[in-house]
Length: 120
Image 1: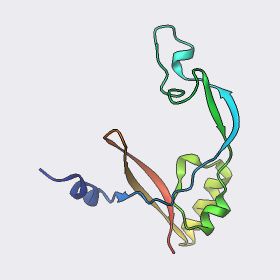
Image 2: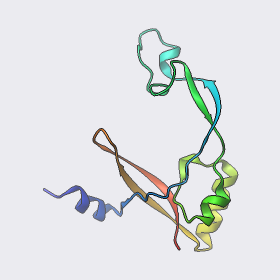
Image 3: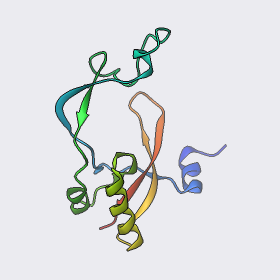
Image 4: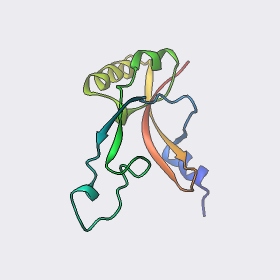
C-alpha cells in the first residue's frame, strides 16, 4: 500500500505553504444561507457552525496585489471573475502556475484545492 506522500507525488499534489493569501473579515455579520435555515429536518448548519447560529462574517475581497508582492499562494476559490482573469494572465506570462495542494486539518483528515503559486 502506498503512503499518502507517494500518492500525492504521483498525482502532482504539493504541500500547502504557510504564506497563503486569505480574505479578511470586515467585522460585519451576514445572514447564513445554509440548508439548515430553510429545512426543518436539518438540525445543524455546517456553514455557520463556528459562528453565531444563522450568521456568518462578511469577508473583504482578496488583495491580489499584496498577495503577488508577498509571493503568497492564492486560493482560486477566493477570487472574483476579474481577479481570475488577472491570475490567468500571470500564468500565461509564466509569472505563476496552478498547483493542487493538500492541507492537513487539525481534527484529522485533509482537504485538497487549487492555488495560483507565485514563485520567487
